[in-house]
Structure formats: structure tokens, C-alpha cells
Image (cartoon, rainbow, N blue to C red; front, side):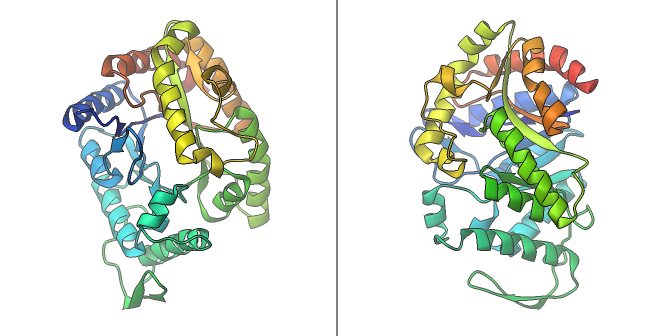
Amino acid sequence: MKVGLFITNQQHLETDMVSALDEQYAMVRLARDRGWDSLFTGQHYLNEGNNKQLQIVPFLARLQAEAGEMTLGLGILLINLHNPVYVAETVATMDVLCRGNFVFGIGLGYREAEFDAFRVPKGQRVRRFEECLELVKRLWTEEEVTWEDEICKLDAVRMNIRPVQKPHPPIWVAANNDRAIERAARIGDNWFINPHSTTATIKRQMVLYRAELDRCGKPFPAEFPCIKEVFCSHDKKTALEMAGPYLFGKYQDYAKWGQDDAMPDDESFDQEFDDLLKDRFVLGSPEECYEQLRPYWEEVGMNHLVIRTHWAGMPLSTALHSMRMISDELLPALRKI
């Protein structure tokens, strides 16, 4: 089992972003020094409400200097908001900076404010997503590319900056609803399982994912990742007291942004926290967290767990408390799986 850290670059408006960056360096260094395997962060534009965040590519490039031998990854890049040439050259650059130890995580997105800002109209979002990925892969692998659509015109070009990894970095596709999960099986190297859905939903969707892999003649991925919201403390009561307000605040924001609109119809974040956390979040002692995570390797097939244990507004000391307990007590148990 590999274990990674999902670093939160989203902060409240009153937060000093320079100080917050220093805190995130501290979390990365702890993960590096305690032997965590990977480091991911996410992307949004035009954060709403009491939120702001750094942009993913420069942020991750800076974190690479702190990460040592950890695998770095985009978790995720909203590729249909961007020009494919930008995506191809930027990701190739990141793969070089990381010496070929990099994951290309992608997603469709769900927020109207972002689609509108980049003029991605309804009815074209999935097509642009798939075409962008297709063109990016061609630019990485072909000697000459000709292409024309409403976004990009290429006339027999060759992209000279190429990824270190051949033919390209692994493509992890984030997906929430059933059709998106089938698409992830078809176009990606694996499905990057989200932290939002209940365990029951994910187990149901695994049937769809495996069926689509079979239909496409693709094997089950050798590396199968999942992001989970995890907070470790001495017991569940303490974990809830320490992490609950920040984790609940995150999902209240998701509800306002419409994240659950991109999920199956039976999933909603408009719930009280006690109901929301059931079968969804992992909080408690290291032993309790281990048992809550067990279905993900026994029934889902996860072998790369990416942990988010810090949310906007949470003090650094609180996040480090969880990270130390994970490092000392949960991680060694996971390594034996």
C-alpha cells in the first residue's frame, strides 16, 4: 500500500497566504521525512464565498523542492478549461522537474463559474475534455500533428518538450457519477476515486468500472488510487472535536458550489455532519481508521491511499497531530497489506 498526502491550498479570505504556504511546507516535510509516498493538490478558479487558493501548477512546482523522492501529482487539472498545447507543454515540464516521478491527474469540473470564465459552453464540455486529452497525448508521442477546432489550430507541428515518462505520465481520471466513471475506464490509466462518495456508492460504481474495462479490453490497473478524508487522534470523539468543524465547513462549501450535483442522485452534502460522515469520512484512532479503510483494499482494490487531513481554517498544529499519528501508527499497518 502506498500512502500519499493531499495538501490543501485552499484558505479562508482572512488567511495570510504567505504564512499558510509556510505551514504547507511543514506538512510536506513531515510527510517526506516519515516516508509517505506521494503528494497531490487540486485546482479551482474564482473560488466563491470565504475561500481563495493558489494555482495548482506553480504551487506544485514549488512543493517539489520540499518533497524529496515523493511522487507528485495533479489532483486534478481541469483540462477542458485550457488550451491543449498549454496542457501538453506544462505537464511535460512538470514531469521533467519531477525527474519522471509525476502523475497527470485530470477532471472535467462541475462549477458554472469556471466553465463560463473559460467560455466552455454546455453541450461541449465532455467533448472538449476528451479532445484535449487526445491532442495532448498526440503532441507527446507523434512527430507531426495537424489539428483544428474552435480552441486550437496546428499545422504539421512537432512539440519538442516531451515527458520523461514514455509514452507519457500515468493519467488518473477523477470521476463522480456513473457515466464519468465509465469514461475514466475508457480514456484513463485508472479511476482516481473521489473522497466525496459513500463507501456503498463506490463499491457499486466499481462494478461499472470493471465492466467498462472488460468491454475496452483493458486490465485492472496495477496501481489503483483513492483520496479519503482522514483524521487520526486518540479516539473518535477527539478526532471529531478536532477535525469536525473544518471538514464540515469544506462540505458545506461543496454543497454551495454544486459538487454533489455532479454525483449520483442519491448523494447529497446538504445534511447534518453526523449524517454526512457516515460511511464517507475516516475519523478516529489509528485502529479505528484502519478498520474504516479496510473495505477499500479488500472490496475496491485500492493500493494507493491519498489522505487529506487538513481543511481550510484548521491550525497547523492540528493537522500535524493527525499526520504524526498516521505516520507512527496507521502507516506501518497499511504497509503490511
